[in-house]
Image (cartoon, rainbow, N blue to C red; front, side):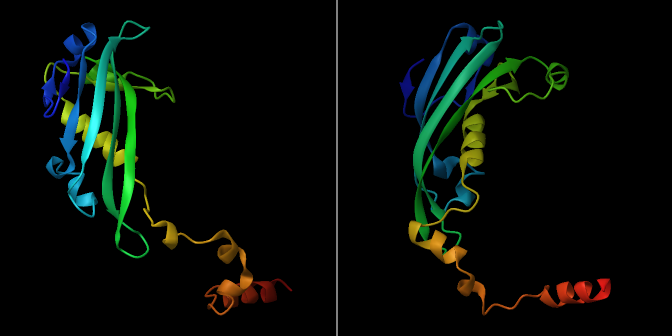
Length: 174
């Protein structure tokens, strides 16, 4: 398989891996039902490439890479902030939920996935894109400057709600 503006949604991952398949294309963020609401604007697209193989342990496997620009909402000011989104992963596929459940949790690079003859490629890309989103996107101007965060005067006029409790506990010990 080759580069496609609209890649297939479903693939047989076992055949894809066995044949050393390659799919590359783009997906519009607006068409991703879970990702789109997380964006400041549904516009943008993700370019991706998926390569299939049989890994060194004779398992059907694939490697995904994706990248694109999206607009997120700044955590501080609420305005749109452009973000380079990218990532991917390496996977190997198992044939049953029972087999998947028997796999020990591992910190390795390859992630086990339940494979299928009708595997949803778009969902995999959307899952990885959601995981790659920053927790608190911010403009450069909205991030605290190290000098401001370190100076005691910056928070000196702020009330300290637990100061009285701390003082009371110190007094009781005596």
